[in-house]
Every structure is written in structure tokens, then in C-alpha cells.
Picture 1 (cartoon, rainbow, N blue to C red):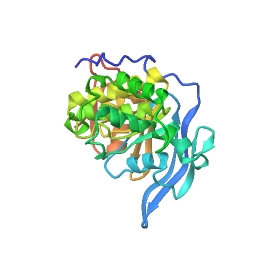
Picture 2 (cartoon, one colour):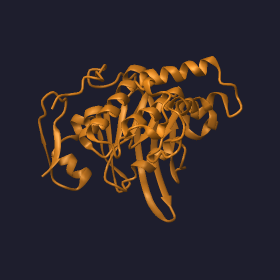
Picture 3 (cartoon, rainbow, N blue to C red):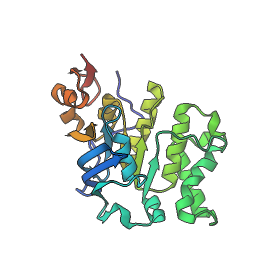
Picture 4 (cartoon, rainbow, N blue to C red):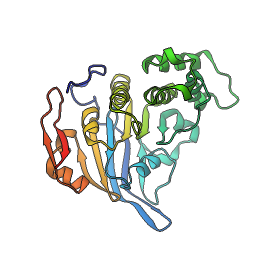
Length: 276
């Protein structure tokens, strides 16, 4: 298997980080209708890195991402964004800094790609504000860096799965946010489109100085495209570190509860994991 060359790793394996953090989660818990979803979760998400959240279904990955996106409030603990508590900024100020792409996106199918991407500028001018030359430039830039400018006038609903995901990511780029929160953006995509989308995400992060937190199911994809991995199980953190630290049989067993082995993979930085 050859490593993709469309998204060079500009950081030599890890994105540059000056020690700052985008998000800091401290003792966070979440209970809904008496059911405990997350408990005593403490994690640091370094600025400028692509960080994966992995774990089995129901482990709390998407719930944690929703809390980072201010879609859900924790019932215990606290979350900081930068140097401030997550709740201390207005909705508009937060949206200018953090962009969130949920798992199920069904809106916008009747828009053109350019119209959809233009929605990313809403936090900057509001519903009644005038769409300025600066807004137009941000939209065109987002179309270019996601390599979807050739489809700008197509209807979103006519795009392939990979093209549609690139269009949504372009909308986040037009939003001009420095932190991107992506919930399983490769779900239901074939392997080629998974690699295409994750290559794009890594390139946008490392070249643009963005912080990305991404929920993924495939541990091999997480190792291949992310700088750091946080693993959840039954609402608890069970492992956290670089791909090299997590792609070992004992740690994989802790995460997934089954025996897993690893094999070296030519042209990849880390071995491949598989169920025994």
C-alpha cells in the first residue's frame, strides 16, 4: 500500500505546536435522563494538531464533540477554549472561531456548492448583513483550497459522497474558523473517498495552522492522518497519545475489548492494526 502523496506531512509527523491548547477538558461528565454518557473525562487538545476521538459505538465520542461545539452542556466539570471557559463568549464570537460539522448533514441539498459555502460567512455578517467583497474572497478561497471550484455551480444533491463532504468542509473554511470539529466525516464513504477527505483535512490543518478534532471509527485511518488519538470506552478515557503509542496490541485490547495484532506497512509511518 502506498502512502497518499496528495497531502504531504509538512510537520515531519506531528503538526507544529507551541504548547498552547485549543480545548482543555477537565473532569467532564454528561448524564441524560439518568444515564451516564461521559464520566470524569480530562483531555488536552493541543493547538495546531489533528486529534482523533476513537472508540466503540456508544463510547461517548460524538457527545464529547457536541460539548466542545456547545451543542450540549456538560453536567459536571468544565471545558476551556484557549484561555477562557467555553461559555464565556457570545454565540457569534464562538462561531467565528469554532466550526462544527455534525454526523448527519441533510440540509443544503438544493443549493449550489457556492451557495452552501457562502453560508459559512453567516457568523461574520448575520442574516441581514451585506455580503461583502471580503466575504466573496473567503468563499472563493475555500473553494480553491478544497479543490471543489470546478463544481461551484453544481447542486449539492448531485455530488458524490466525497465531493459533498469537501463542499461542507469548504463551508467551514469559509467560516474562517481556527478550530474544526468533525463528527465522522468519512462515514458511508468508500475507501478512496475516505482517504481523499482525510488527506484534505490534514492538509488544511497543517498548512493553515488550524486545530482539528475528528471522530473516527477506523483506528488505522486515525493513525495515518492524525497527530494524536484519544480513545474512549463506556464514557471513560482509556488511552491517549500519539499513533505510535496507541497502535500496540495491549492498548488496542484496552480500547476495543478484543485481541488485535499489528503488522508493519511499507510507506506508512505506523503499523496496521487488525483483529485476530
